[in-house]
Length: 204
Image (cartoon, rainbow, N blue to C red; front, top):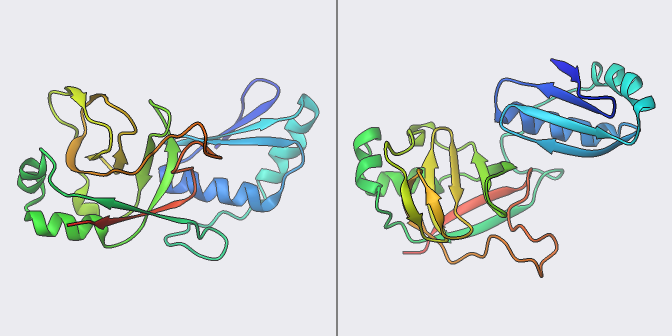
C-alpha cells in the first residue's frame, strides 16, 4: 500500500524485509523522476521527493512498477562482502536448544548462503541482514546484556547482525569478527549498506 508522507515523500507498506528490498530494487531500476532518496526499513520504503509537484505523478508510476524478489547475488545486485567469524558466541548453547541444531550445524547454516542487508539501524554501521536458513530464526534474549563487545555476531527473529561497537543488546550471540563495520574515513563509512550481500565465513 502506498501513502502520501507529507507533501514531499511517499511511504510504501509491505509484508516483510524481502519485499522492502524488492521495492527498493524496483524503484532504483525505474529511475522515477523526482525521487532523491530511497530509505528502507523493516516493513516500509520511504521515497523522498525533490518537491510536492512529483508526489502525484510518482505515486501513479509506482502502481506500474514491476517488483520482483532477488534471492541471490546477480549482475545487478552482486556486491558481496565476506565477513570472517570465529563461532564461539556465548549463546551458541541456547541457540542450539532453541533450534535443535549442534554447534557445527549452526555454523553451517549461518555460512551456507549469503544474506542481504535489509536496512541499517540503532547504531552507525549496524545492518539488519535477512535471508539464509530459517532454522536460525530465534527470539531475542529474555534479558538483554548491558555490554556486547564490538564485532559480536548475533541472531534475533528473522535477522542476523554484527555489532559495530560496544553497546547494550539483546541478540543471541553466536560469534565474533574483526571486521570494521563503521569507518568515517571510508566511503561509504558503513561496510554493509542496504541492498548489498554478506557471506559469513568460519575462520576456525
